[in-house]
Image 1 (cartoon, rainbow, N blue to C red):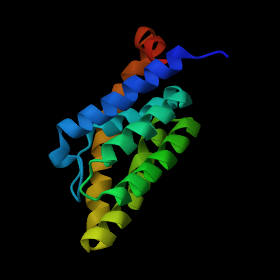
Image 2: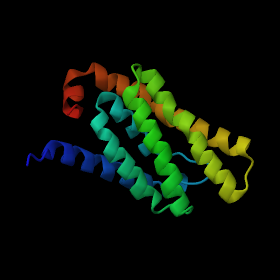
Image 3: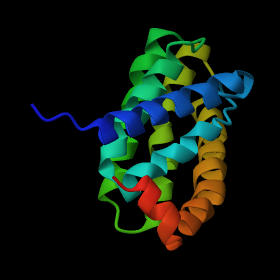
Image 4: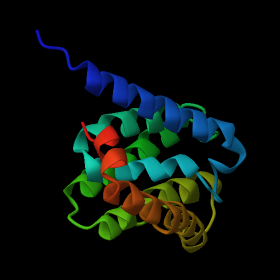
Length: 157
């Protein structure tokens, strides 16, 4: 049996990073107004799709502590699952950075159902925060990483 320790190590680091960053800023990681900085990591599958598992498990672990409970674990993790699939299939980093904003509608529906907040309000708040985190902050950061061969090769499997 051939065990890929590089895969296990890198994904474990991603799980921990996603979880620690989210929990550290937990007052703004959950709810109608979210500013989950760890969402920048969803762009990693653009570089290598094998990061998808670490991001999905990091989101699942983070949502375990969500005030929305099991519902957030299911819907939030599902939104992340769809996001990383589309990010990994994207040919453009900019397009990849938009998928978290698009799939945040799933989180908006969840919040609307749980907190009885109008879907338009929850959608706009979640989508704006995803756009700021992933597209406005994450996109330029990943452009730098991709253009720097040393950084890129450190991240690439």
